[in-house]
Structure formats: structure tokens, C-alpha cells
Image 1 (tube, rainbow, N blue to C red):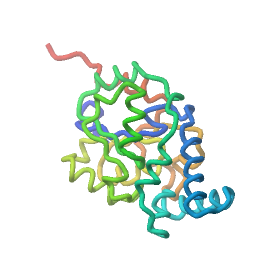
Image 2 (image 1 turned 90 degrees about the vertical axis):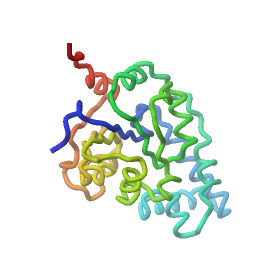
Image 3 (image 1 turned 45 degrees about the vertical axis):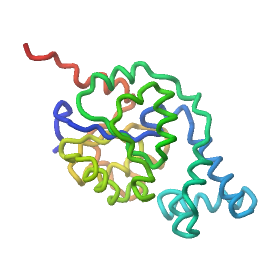
Image 4 (image 1 turned 90 degrees about the horizontal axis):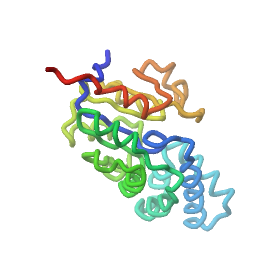
Length: 229
């Protein structure tokens, strides 16, 4: 049974397609730059690079993980290259800023991306001030979601009680370890087929406590109860 939202002490937010709408389509830029990196690194045509990119993602959870496991590449140049994108499609969000301001408890970003990428996005949204920490792929030891190990490291390193935490994600399978630890889980629906609860071998979605279409509107409804007199 999930904890009441008003009793949540730590809010753990995914970054991409969660804190900003998936319709911004930043992933198209990232996807293209991943392919560019692989083509340049191996000196191969773009179609061959794309086939490798998708296999690494399928077999290892992220393309970066596949490159590290199979080719021992240095992750820093990869992250620098793929996150050098134009974030202007993400509109500033005063509503999200206000909603986070009213939301009681600590706020954390947990992303398979980099701290630099998170800063670029949250600065653009105008919400950077709300987050105590960004737990990125580097701090996670380059082990991507939904591997349970970095989730355990996150809660241990940052003093999070899972039963008093809520995790918000657009990829449903990434909520499975959070639910298993006792976190309240929120799935932000997108049009991506691979992000659905019945994809990735995780069943029908019993690990999801709340499913929302508009994260900002949903957050606006939390923490608005009047103060006791």
C-alpha cells in the first residue's frame, strides 16, 4: 500500500519526458547524436552505427552501457557529445516552478543522463532551485535504470526512507525497483509504446500507484490543504 501523498518526505523525479513534456522531442536530438558518436568512434556508416546503437540499448538498457561493457569506451566524451543539444524546444514553466515550491519535502532528480544535461533542462524550465541533488548516470556508476543496484545506492547515499519517498517516471518499467523498495510510484503517460506498463516484461502495471497525463496539473493538486489554525 502506497504512502499518502501528503506524507511523502522525498520526491524523486526522472528528468527527460517527465519534468518537461515528451512533445518537446529532445530525444530525437539525443538519438541522432548517439548515432553520430558511434559512427565517428568506429569509423562506420551511419546505418551500421544506428543498428549497433539499438542493439546496445536493447541488450544493456542504454547505448552507453553497451559501449562500456562491450568496448570499454570512456563515458565522458560520449556524454559530452550526446547532451550537446538545443534545449529551446523546452518552454520555461512558471506553473511547474510554483507547484514544486508548494510541494512539501525534498526534491531529487534521478536520471540516466548527466548532471550537465539536467542543469541545462532545469535552468531552461526555471526550476533548478528546487532540487537538493541530481543523481545522474555517473553517480550511479554508469549502471542505468531499471537495474535495482543504483536505486539502493541512491537511498543509502542520500538518506532516503523508501516508504516515505515518491518516484515519478515516464518509463513504467523504471518504477518496478522503486515499488519493490516501498516507494509510491507515479507514471507520467507518453505516446511511446516502449514506455508502457505492459512493456519490458513487468506485467500489467501493478507497480504503478498513480498514472497521470499532466504532471504539472497533478502536482498542483498536492500540498494545497490549508494550514491548521
